[in-house]
Image (cartoon, rainbow, N blue to C red; front, side, top):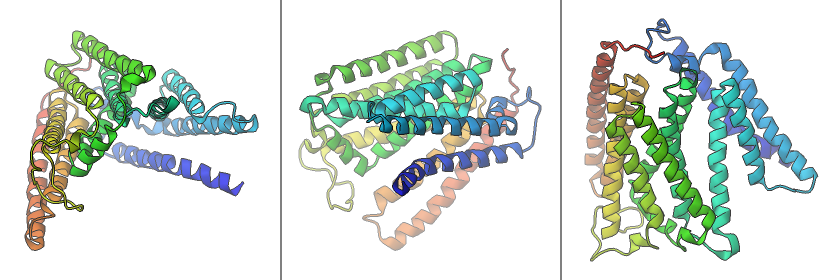
Length: 376
């Protein structure tokens, strides 16, 4: 009994932590300078974190969690008739239906995360079915395509006033995972882990994974083209989404241990903890992912400026500043003299903070000075 309590606590503690963060963020937003809802360009952002329905949404979210825990307990009492993946899928579907019907954004977020987690776990099960040992990169690609699909759906939902705050959840669940994955793959450790993920048989050995990836790709293309036809997505953003989907789609086709098959002698670009440099292929993919994450963050800032959405500008500026600082530590810590390194780090922190804050305020000032009518 005590072990079950600790298991439930371990499951619910991260969730409660996220809820606390959301409530703190909503409290900060509420106590900022208030504007009339029709004059606020991000009125739906305030509405999503409004105090009036935060408590009811929290209770609905807890009901969603207890529903899943109850299903797990009943399934165990009946001899584990269903796997935990089926329980997760049923719970996520029920939460998704309730979130759409009652417009509950907290439950919607966890339901979408649950569906993505279910597919990831199911893909790993399919990859090990009958000893196929399919490469992990296929499941990795599928999860990223799901995140890109969330972003595409978020852009599509922006045209409906009643779905606008739900669109915010889809956009956040699309932007943050893709940015995090690009951020991770742009590091040397990420490149080497990607090389290990390519070990195994091609994903064509599993028709379930193949069909899933095709469905995800077709859904992204269809949703983005429809959104572009309704003038919801500019051409550059359409091209950027397709390029990101294609980039991660290529990962699923990479040959086994591509990173170890360097062309010619290794190119030394600094020494990490293991004392090894980057091979030719590793250096190529490091450049690709570093360029991709930089352009993606720059695109976020520009999209926030042209769409007059301050939260996108702030999010892009934060991640871009973080990227510059992390890259400095990742590239120069191992071979620079430590005194020079920390002096340079202090100067870099000052310059990046000053320039990014000046640029952010300039963009936000431009957004405030251009009124935008809210479409009905």
